[in-house]
Amino acid sequence: MLKGRGDKKVKNKIALKTLAISIVFVVVASGNVAAQPGPVTVQGVVTYADGTLVPDGWTVLLENLDECYPSEPWATTTDSTLAPFNYLVTGTAQLTSTFVITASDPAEIYTGTETFTAYLLETCIINITVTMLCVTVEYPNGGEEIAIGNIVEVSASATDDTEVVSVDFSYSADNGTTWNTIGAGSLASGDTMDGIWNVSWDTTGRLIVGDEYLIKAVATDNEANTVEDESDSTFSLMDKGKPLFKNAEVEPSTILVGETTEVTFSIDAADKESEVYEVRVYYGATLIGSMSLVGSYIQDTLAWKMYEFQYDLTPPAEATYSFSVVPMDTYGNYNTTTVSVEAVNLVTYNITLYPGMNLISLPLMPNNVSIEAVIPAGQAADGDWIYADKPGQGLNWEYACYSSGWKGTLTTLEPEKGYLYNRAGPDFNISVTGTPLTSVNTTIYEGWNLLGYAKTESASLSIINEPCDWDWIYAWEPDIGWEYVYYYSGGWYGTFIDFTPGEGYVYCRAGPTFYWIY
Image (tube, rainbow, N blue to C red; front, top):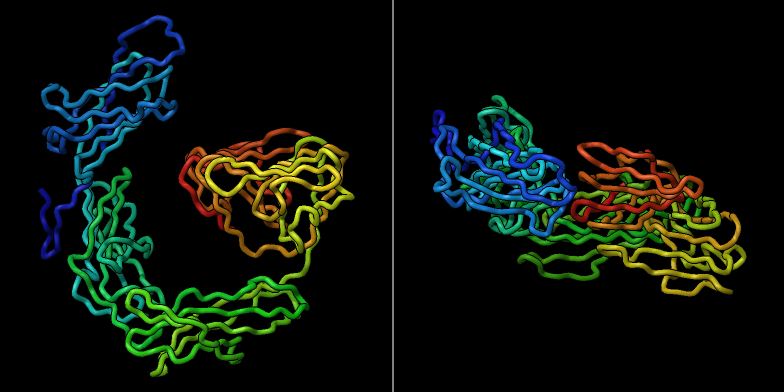
């Protein structure tokens, strides 16, 4: 039973943690065993910390981490009639395999996981012990009135019998239907067994849906168990006059040095207590103009106004030019956000193609992305083929072939995409002239992807912002063949270490779809 400390709020939220267990292997068959799948039997007890069995009906799942079978995961439930054990489940292995077994109650409040190695035709005895992890939202916990624009110190208490390693916070503006990340908390007082965790929440310009909110805290311990808690009731974020905004941007965000380019600023603005009166654009302390109202719409009971402003910009040198966009309401209250324009020079980059297969990409944005402009008739050879992967999960090919002109479904060559180029003629250089990309956001889908590296300088593999175990990346070197890296347990391992301008890559994604931002 959980007990309170002093006047501290205690909630009945408990998570399972797996302590060290004893695993006994009993060989039930001996001699030479052919490398064919065979059964692996796992049995044991799931108990609370005091040694009593958990109730019948808990889910127990077994999975082979080294091999894949259609019947995975193998499932059973706890059953005290199996005494002296309370579960029995049979999996499959070809030879020696690593398994993971997970026990959880029907409400998934308690969860425990253990990894072990077993040989086919073996019986493994695994005993799992349950202990406690608890987290409680302390502030804001319901009934508070907080002014939008304040920095709020969100707080939660967390206890564990071993170690709390993190507490992550989020907020909801729709009574818990959806949650938005605030960030990871830091230990403010106490220790990792019983402490207070805080995170700073900047409410400026972000909270634009409704005026009643909830906080959620998710605690994780050193055995990867998690438990969560929400505010007891909603609290209010009061609009004290500062306008709200969203969709602030400037297009194009990259322009050429020495050329006059018309850039367009845009923003949506609203105010809860009054109305947006004007939106101004500043460069430093200099007012360069007021934005024009171009439309309006209603969303979440707020009247949003859409503003735009065109401005001719002639940058004298390569630099980042930052502008302040300032919505103001009828009472003179204002909010500020910053948008930037990157001024760059034209760059030419050469990519060498060799006879046979090449895996390439464009490290900058060409002036003309048509395939005829990037690889003109004087360089293409009859019998050249280019293959690309259409966006989406899995490899979906489109192609172009050259025979007195380019023909096929592939009509443009662009950065971020990878291209398989089967060269029928001799060596030649693709000379690409265009503008470097200041930022890249490439969607990498689960499974196979053919993609490009869209920068003019090499970069380490650390620029992949969301790697997961068993991600594989392949590169092709005409004089070497396939090179590769894979990600496992926190690092990349393999035969190449850097992304190189002009080269393409095959990415086999083991985890969910993510956005590669660099």
